[in-house]
Image (tube, rainbow over all chains, first blue to last red; front, side):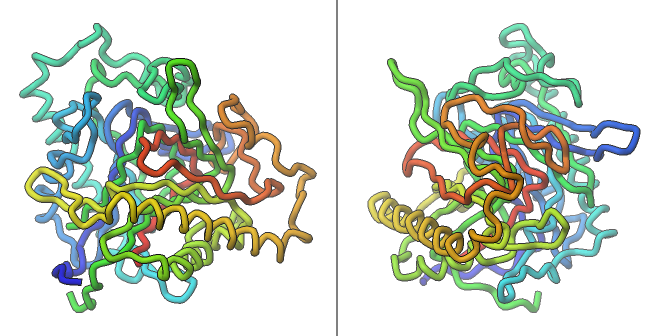
Length: 209
Length: 209
């Protein structure tokens, strides 16, 4: 092995592109149904912070994740989620910090819950700000291709089966791709992240910071 | 950071637990529909090999992945996929080898396609062998809970919506959980991995070897 070993990371993300993703943000209660958020074409960011992570690393981290060519263009080749004007679903995922010790996984390197929540909220806000800023720059030319903005991909809790046919055919959910307004949705920190993911190839990437 | 930096890995996996997962193994042709495989409750292993990976590392790698407590018990706490008698879906995922260089991702560390295919096939075979061996040991006591073996989760290409209600409610697909025979399914190396994933929380873990 001649590669230089990287220092231990302060944050770990796994990124997957999606044509539709749906995440539970509030579990069902005795008198209430579960609440969900969903996004159409774009990417899912699973994020975990380690001890030592601080807010001042977040702007560059978010900028990298949104600008790095981690998604596929429909025409082939990789592009960033901002290039694609795709949406982003952020999923807090403390398990990503796991290290094997025997058959068990240990999470001793993970940040405390309070600090993690603060960083997570800041991370989501920065994603929203950067996606909005990028959308403001490019929206004029690209919005409304196909005449449909929003529509099928909205309505948390509603059934929006059918709709878009992806390259693989049979994609579930009302994912729109071009035409849908880019948006950031995110899971509830500390909750169970009940997730349904549809991809035309997840293109899973590991990005550490 | 006082942690010792790990050496560069020879293989990288990302593991997610699922209640149902469906993967395209053959794209649609002019006269044929796409072919799919699917699994019920268990885990998805996304796998990428780096230059220098060899077959002799695979038995330990597979044993670790199948015995490590990377999944959740319905009752809480982590358990291995063998403990749970769950199924395994193996997804070849070369993108996992990506390294950022500017805004682009580079995959120079990835193994060659020929060597990767050979390792991938061996990896899948070992998963099948270890899952079968474990099933042979424990099947007597656990098989047929609920009186249903196989059933809804079978039938690639068929529509098997509805069925199991997971902890999050509204799980799509005919995932069975207890009662389904554990099995290994896998994607076609080099193909686009069109994937549909349903989870009660992906419990995403990174495991490197």
